[in-house]
Length: 268
Image (cartoon, rainbow, N blue to C red):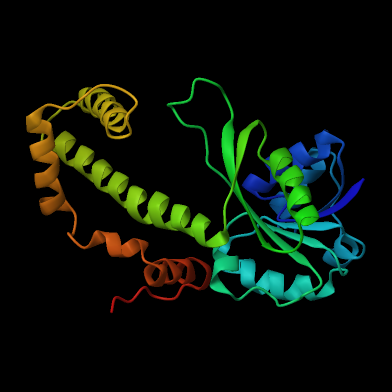
């Protein structure tokens, strides 16, 4: 049975993952948690908490489900203590992409992240993205086994590189799509402020967002000529013309460092 140390086991996401890992029967789970609320939550799930040193002493794999701002400090404290051959599993690509993870040639690094459920899918479940940042094929196989268990019903696994995953998150899904959706929400609040009933605005907007995604990604329907004209106008009025530079390697790395170190994003 795989000996798995899980840091952040009592966090909001950690609790869900802890339950899945424990119920699977595939792992000897060692939960590490320092927050009182998290420890209490794990105890209520009949999961005991042990010290970091005990958890990693003979671990086959270590999973870090800790806040982005803490991940570098925690990995630099823990990774030097793990046995040779240990697989380190990261739930976000930023630390790996930053180049600041602890340097050890005798361990492996694996990154995975959920795609989340899409309203375009008819079946329940989600796809995941994965990358072997450092290690051998057997390490990747163990990483996928752990990831599939952590994320519940997995419909499929996309194998990428870390550099490709950061293009997906944070770059396209948060920096680009998140910003656009935040603008949409602000626009929604504004039309409600101007007197449109909130329920009417919500129903109308959600329907049109669904239709727009369906058309733009080739799933269904079509746009009128007028709709294409107003979308082109909107890009000029709402979005900077040079927004695609947010997807360059230099910009993506700056976004990553903003997330994990709090460094200010500075444009050239």
